[in-house]
Length: 475
Image 1 (tube, rainbow, N blue to C red):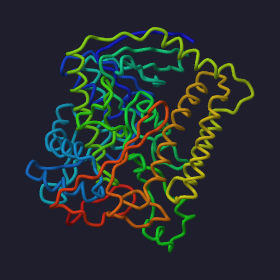
Image 2 (image 1 turned 45 degrees about the vertical axis):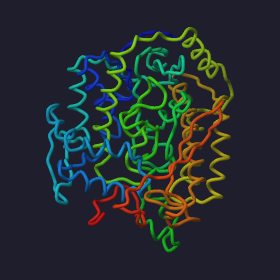
Image 3 (image 1 turned 45 degrees about the horizontal axis):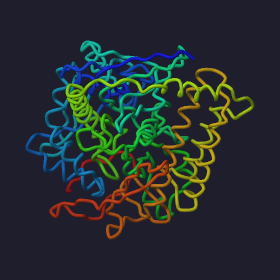
Image 4 (image 1 turned 90 degrees about the vertical axis):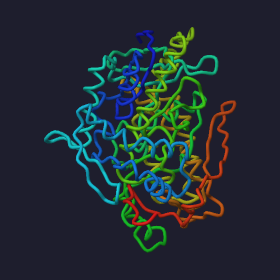
């Protein structure tokens, strides 16, 4: 396995909308940027595969947007993230036109609605956003390395100082030292056997952040596409049919940040779906695309500022060799399970026991199975570079799945896009809480924070539903 070492001011992991926007902003502020992407940056991401809707909000409608997002999110929204979102949406989305993004506006309520992009003929609408942003990144002088996946973040002196990435096309490890690292790796809906996300959406970034000392927040909140959720919860709908027709869609929880993309670990930022967004338990349709633009720009800007104010670090001694040795052990295994088989089993476990239809017994089964699968990964037989990459992604996916299941067991209610058959109603008296988890001496430790609910907006009983929510006629 080849080994290379390099450095940059700002390292961005992920080539979807958030990563592209972060790169543009960091370059605008003068930082040297290296962007790494599993797939070609601007290509097969959730952004490019999306419907192309972004939140429209007039400057005078910020209060109404805040009320809408709080009510739809069940009042467990991250308030710092929400305030940043509401502040920036009126300006950040229209400025996309400067990067060649064509936007058409659709009004729904006074001052609120959607912007919409369109891809070229034969393309999904999301390419109308990612293709111009990729061109803007290239024009900015940022370096882009496609086909590289991070296997770990580099930590030294309590700060993240870069990452190690594996490139299967060359069977090489690349260690990158960076003053600031932005996680923009997207969500993890492909953890489930049925998903409307690209196959590479495997939740790697959540596990990378947790391993590096960052906190994950609200990991139970994952939205699913599903017909007739209320009837499923009250037992009048065919739950088997729901399992056949539904699909995992979007992570609402994720890496905890401060509203500017900064995590509690110096040098590590997060933006886009990998970060715990402003949405709480459910989100407004079109808000995900708006979120990646708002927080991609914020994280890229803060990353550039950190780089300008600090000395560029070096790759810690021995790190790349140790990582090569760890991955090489998988090459030495013989007769073990294949990574593809473990991946399939993990996806089936998550869909059958921790997906649309779940309760305490099913989640308990999921917890046991995910733990066992995580231990099996060490025995995987990786015969070629693609197998090795899949094995590493499966290891990270098991860590992410573990936290989703644990958080889902903890929340004993249904709220927004989170549903439990044994607790089919929301309960504001007990569950206006957010849960954060971080590793302490290698073990997950959770802290709970009461929701901050403005007196003039509720809380009322939060809505329950699937997928993306429409604007409420009253919020």
